[in-house]
Length: 180
Image (cartoon, rainbow, N blue to C red):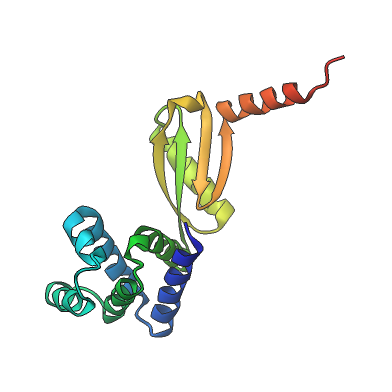
């Protein structure tokens, strides 16, 4: 994620919080993200430099006017004007991360070689929530290359308890041992 995307996301978050419209902005960011990711033509329309800002603004007002908070509409116009719509995915991700953190929520991903049973997922969620002192939403990914064990990612933090990581560490230790 780029530093520019984080600055835009932080600015949107700060203004939304200061003007007491954080929830409406979070909902609008989520709606806008769904539109951009599910309607490639909408994303292409926003990025198209041949369409004037005024035309885009008119269309956006007609189509989304009542569905997006005014601050989200202003923010989208700013992104268009600054030619930053291409950074939308990173901006949205940074905003959602910041919003969730402000609400005491964190998203974690647990990766394992095989699907984990629901009781174990519940236990992992409980332990992560206790450790991070937040509410955790947990997603599961299966990656047979891990061989065994699990990896847990929360934001940029990775806790790697996989057998693959342990084998790699052993291999590195063996390589580092001088042979006489």
